[in-house]
Image 1 (cartoon, rainbow, N blue to C red):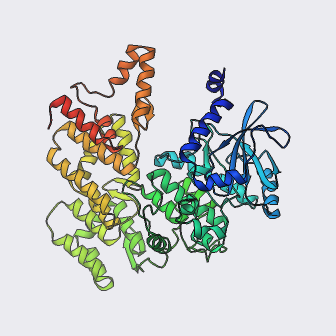
Image 2 (tube, one colour):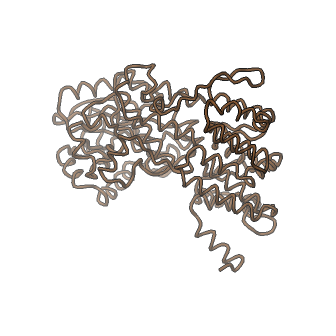
Image 3 (tube, rainbow, N blue to C red):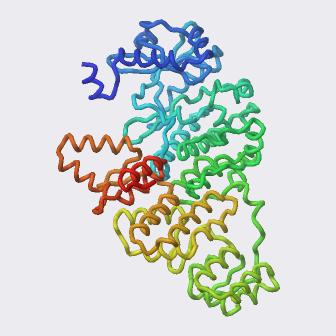
Length: 560
């Protein structure tokens, strides 16, 4: 009966839950949790609020709470009991019942047990986002908008979360809908310095710098959102493995170690959310202000809010009016974009000496870049592109008649075309790789991002050696597409797979239906020559299955 109920509702039986939690508790419960459970212990069978029956203790991830599984009228709930007995906190917990949002866990009831306050919230059988990673599109389309709306609902109710992190974001279903939990009950500021690197409370990894001084603002929650997004994409916490001194330096200097495969748009979002200075937080028009709801909403809709902290770093590029295509330009960036958008006319401006002649008295450095291009023999398009990158690397990537909003945009479009077997842009991808366009652009945008630059250079080098081999050409196209897009999914017959286990389960399911269904999917994994399909092979490489691929080659081809 319990198995049938779980299949129908996704809810485990009370006995299953008790056994699971007891086994988990014996293996991982910390000494701090053991003391807490002694202080806040509620016997099994006790009725809370006169109706919720306590069934079993659950693992708590906070040093200030104990958590219990409860049942009421056949449904499962969670009771969170808090160590604090202050009247202020009891009042705040009662106020949480008034928050009504589909992105925030509902507080059904509040009460006290032996003077300790508790709340009753839903039980989420699908677990939290802890230890899960998502593609850029999954984050932008569903998770980030949901978290932004959830935080807005909390802040409109004058509630700060204080401990936003992956383990406090629960999955409503397998479709990826999420809900924020454990809000308004974060670690008190007085505990922060003690817990910061003690290992007893990882909330401090996600905490904004000002919270260590006892300052909690809505901006503090958005800092935690930025750190959370970083982890949900990369699988690592921000500043992971740093000493306390290194951590302090990185936070204060706003130095973020973005991974090479993180899309530029996502880097921009995290940079805006984790801006450390809150001195301008009350001035909504100030450019150096941490992003909150409006900026995140604009970003999700494709907008480009100003990045805080960059205003003082921008080099003054105001110039006398330069006329190009019957329009006047008074700054270098706007002129560079106009030249790129009017590619052929822009090349004429460069190679006729018009640009070098204009910049010679205005900006000798830019004039030098232009003169170098004029005097160098080579592909005019490559020389023009490299000169534009030196003059002012634009956010968008321009090449001839093509424009990509970012490297991520290019990667996504490549991946879509490759999966659809659409070859109309193959000549474009061939040029980008064979002429070193991508590595030039990467170095111009951020010469310190050596990981990305070296990864692109490696693909370009491999491509140069084997570009006439159609299969190897497709292999390098896929490598570049996965690298730039940040996507880590395998698309087969309209279905996405993110892990080998997901694919194996689907194969087993197909086999249970019919051999024909099984063989049809297998046909997407092996090509006509008996080799691994290119998308499948590159996907395995990108998700870290190099050893498995090597073993396959040894078994199949006798490779050393």
